[in-house]
Length: 165
Image (cartoon, rainbow, N blue to C red):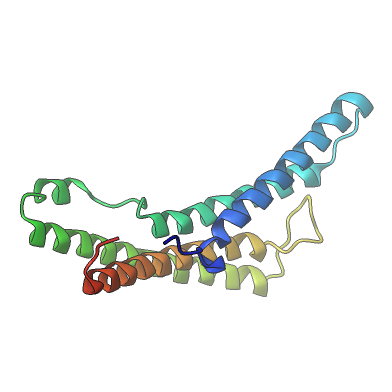
């Protein structure tokens, strides 16, 4: 039976799709006004860069869920003949990735807090605070760590039930 995927497993996809469409519209508008009216808006380029940052970090979080995040696979491939050791190597790799994700979440959060305290804004978009860009990093890295944990828990639960997903 096909189980319907919960909404929270699709958040990253929706962020990527919505921001890609918005980027396409904004950049098309900027190109149109530049060539036909000799008018450029600096905020459109700045806003599309901001959306690209959000897309990148949403992709990082999504990669954690799909098990395509960066990790060392050479050691695990060498140990594939020994399934137990292979599984331990993958688990240690995931643990290292989770710790790294949460460390980066903390470090980006510190930077974000500093931009909030200093009231920094984008030069082309003075109405947009700069911490919005760092929020993407905090959510993306925390999301990646949580997605790796979610994937591991699902793996162990399905293994306990007798079928490996």
